Length: 453
Image 1 (cartoon, rainbow, N blue to C red):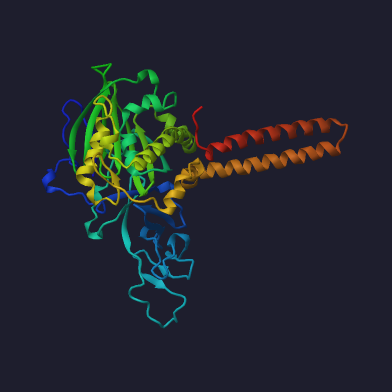
Image 2 (image 1 turned 90 degrees about the vertical axis):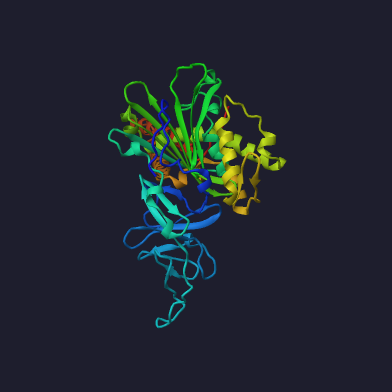
């Protein structure tokens, strides 16, 4: 699925949003789901994840191709993701059963060598694909998987474009995340003063138009009403997991895009894959370390995080529909309400959802409830981001080295009492200790969430 950019003058339809509604039905399993950025995927370890609380595991087969199985050993239901990779097969650490990329069992150590493996000793397998640096999984029948239906950003294939990627787990349902990122009105207030955020003085009525709405998604455009001839900004939601913001800046041919892929991990938890891209001021993205860019991205998400957690908790506690609870404005909330109404119309197959006038609500399971308490940045981002986890480990090693150096220099100062060496060693020891303290303080950026003052 190649996503065509919307042009405000003609607002042409695209191939992804054209089929008449009467001929369509939404099947959430017949969709591609983003799982991880390829650069964040471990090379030689299983990678567990879930979609609507259904567990899956990714691993690399012997030919280095990615494979996806149900994360449940058919022997005694242990998680395969807790296991290890041996010669391209994933081994369950409970009893050592091994499974190939197709899910077939290839070894059971408790059986004699001459014994035939049980025909039903297999784990369901799923189609895996890679596209523009993202790993995708198809949850439907393998023969129905269409690689062309993976959401593809055409600009990324053009020369001159650069992009930055970030993945974060969030402790609320996917529908609240989609609502949040389709809401341009909150940016000026919630993200005031943050780089890439907004400014309170720019809060204003918005001109908002819905251009297309079908089972495949929603497309629209918006601009500030205070500048009636201002530049239109385009927003599109491609069901079930991509919100795309694009804008053309000036007459220089500059283009900016923000692709926000989402994964419904389960009830009360989701994952966002943020990909910002542009064809101007490229040196900034090329020179800035990925982990440094993530500090700001996390800050932006964390400004909204407690608000959305509280919003979802209150809605679920009240048990009323959003139509009864919300007081939407035509000058700010059109896209949000359009999305919620889309769920009313097409969301009946989803395991759970919160539409505008209808919903399917389920109890938060024990694992999801536990995840809601994990609001620290380390749990939500650092441990699943290859760049930030490396940077975090580097700060640990640097802090330990500086602390050891400070202690060693202090010892030198003690044994050289009364000499110039004592003064030099003591000064160097204090400097090393001070730098270690600074590194330790910086280290907290990989652990703690941003809090408003």
